[in-house]
Image (cartoon, rainbow, N blue to C red; front, side):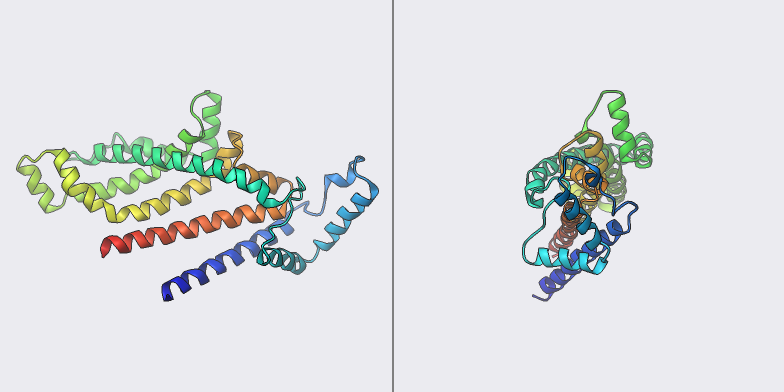
Length: 282
């Protein structure tokens, strides 16, 4: 109960910090009080007056925070400033798109990273053949890699996400596997001629399992950080693209909802990794 209460308190604190931080940053962003709709002749004078009144109310940061927090407490995520529809109606179908992209990207990344780390660490001397591509991918931003794939007309959002994650996961797995190969009982088994396949199944992989929780948390956090540029460049209709459009159009309700979802995903991934590690140790 104490652990659950502490986790709940931390989650509430994170949500409040996200709400305050997002609202403050958007409120003081350049051009927040300008609205192109006020200059559009298609809007009636009454509508333009309402837009002006809305901008006037936004001058008070305290009032903005009170409105947003009060709405979320009562289960109302607000209405999109750009599209004029409830925020949840915009987010709900995009969650499935982004979720599928994350799952496929993480699965492919783990496969590539595990395969490369086994090949690079299984020898008597760790091979540098796989180190150079991983180092290059670590230095390339997600947006640059996605743009390169578009220019050469090869690859897609899943491949870009997988390569970015695999480069980071590879460094983690390579160190863990290299350490496992140097364990005395493994060295003794190799000296006795035990096959590598049997060593992997009986010794190496079981020794790696307690660390997979931390790797899962790292993969999720890294994938979420790369989600926005990948979805925007490849025009994927997910929550990353929605967050980008909301930031461009100063759509506070949408941007606030998306950032809260991403923050909760990071918090839950961290809790999951800690639980997995505790269960393995027990």
